[in-house]
Length: 145
Image (cartoon, rainbow, N blue to C red; front, side, top):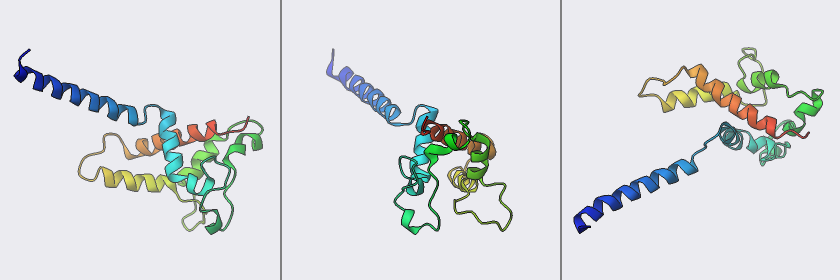
């Protein structure tokens, strides 16, 4: 093989190996997205294990709940709808108080900033719902059975 033909082949190999590496480091399953959401947004208060022992615990007015006991406290059924409402935060009264951030609003703001110069690929509500459901799937996997 001529030397001039080796360079393009080497560049192609490098390009494809970089693409494979990038794909292997990105979340590939819904549970990976949920875990990332939890670690990014919830673990600081609830702890990495979900037990309510996060590093910000001493700065909170009330201790966050142990998320690993939600199913046990609900007669063995994971309270999906209730958690969705609490995390999304849309049903709070206009001047209501919540110790937890309203993640639905936060997600909408972050998504709007990210897609500021381009049209949303899907509706903003669908993006928020997807992120919340991935998070809930991960919290469900944290349950003590």
